Image (tube, rainbow, N blue to C red; front, side, top):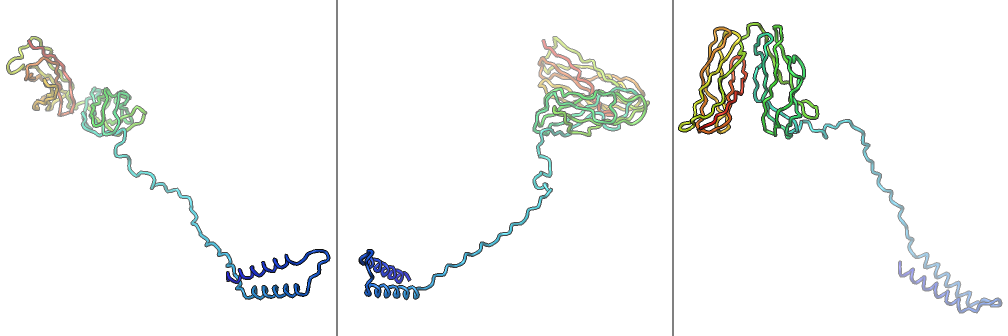
Length: 309
């Protein structure tokens, strides 16, 4: 098809050039030979054009229609929100131990001290702006809050002591306490103190010792034996089980064997005890008397100094 089109263009060009050789002017008259030549050329071109194949331009193909799904709004966000609390939150704690367990009996209007020992299992260090706060129930004449007395780093422990007093009437009383961060938000809640008051409850009401400072002590040889006495007073008849917990010359704690003392009535009994300085060093020391039964309460520390010769 390209060759035929080229030939037609060549013939047309020849005709044009031939026409350029014809004399032009107002008095020029076409000759019969020129007319004949023009007629033949026109016929030839027409015949060639009729033999050329017709070029058909295809109609544009319509683009396929893509139908997108309509997105409906949803209120479900559970996939984006964690379903559990972080494994290690800033403020977290666990219970370690306590004194005055639930249902401990007290005399009417008897004063006592409740303690909780807890561990910091969070990632933040507790400072003295943290508080142990009363939440609900029976406050038992305790302060509304008690500031921590020291900083507690993660994995550290602290013992919190709150003075309280039993009511004037017999009954069962329960109060709830919690830790409060310096941001004012409570955590480690539902720590309870539950007591039963009556006029005849068996109870250790006081403990005293004869521990005192000693100077000019002969600390040579096997060390120094500090003999002292412990006086325990109860509210009525019963048996008291207690331990002595003392600081050692190395600054660590030592627990002596438990002792059991039977009381026939509300009275005071005095027991002789011993504390040993095994290395013969000067120092500051202390002893606590822990009442394991009936009321799980600690008395002391009773402090004293030893000065060797």
